[in-house]
Image (cartoon, rainbow, N blue to C red):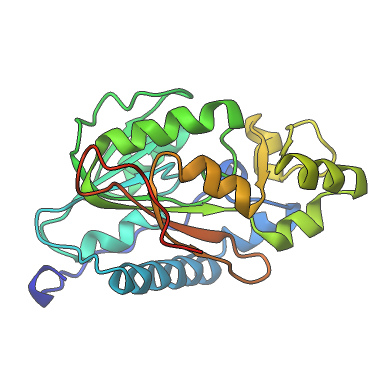
Length: 260
């Protein structure tokens, strides 16, 4: 990565309780976990190590001059870890102005922007981003907005660029949906849990967002209609599944899936 050179960077502070409530809390006890420095940073390192390993497996290498976007950056928990790689252009964007202001004050070395609930991302030009992270973001974007955001991220991603996106997997479905909700989930391929639902995640209740559950088939239909799906990695309990998406090298190529 970037010629193998590493630059030391201050890791920065752990997120505040306010940010944890807005971005990280599935349950009340998660607030304490995600404001504990050891847990907060350990989970970020593990996620980034897994992501970089996955990128290597699909043949993507970060290079000097690449532009990396964390979409829904929250406290820049992931983006901040890439500041040790020289010559990357790092960008974070979030719908919550509190997150954007906190990142600007506490995590230098990246550009931060506030986005609206709906596209576009006004700061980003067509084909200007090499790598996009969206961790625990499309798990809260309502289904009526999902496709428009996928098209917007496709617009700004360069041909051949990679988009890493997490979605709620089987353990979340089993733990959060009741019997009648499971029936609807299996019948429709999705379930959209509103912020006033008694089982909704704490952060969604706080921010007025939804929790989005989708079957594998529905994910492939939705995400695969815009991007080429390279990998769909199902992970363990309390870990969100990972989608590895790519904008095809040829602009007019039809999205295709290499995952059976």
